[in-house]
Image (cartoon, rainbow, N blue to C red; front, side):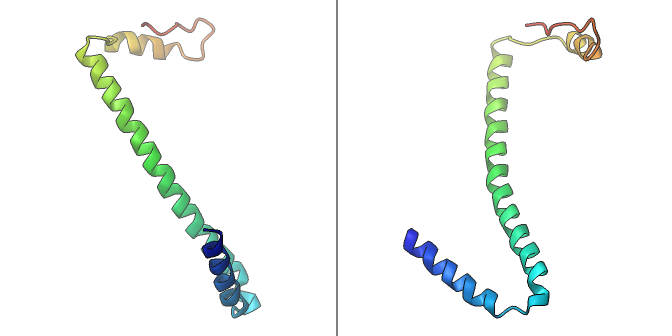
Length: 90
């Protein structure tokens, strides 16, 4: 893997040397956008997996009868941030 990284680095350096100086800020923006997009995709995949797992757990809770009435949830939410904030019902 280190060898492949070195090859890619050298290829990128060779390409970058051919870019006129005035276009370097745009190139940096492009590289940054690419890296961010790739990172977000893998992060997005993890978020999706976490949501799927949470949904499965919620469905198991529902099937087992472990749920809180909607009115109780709304009553609790209405007190968020208030000095007399309620504790969530279990």
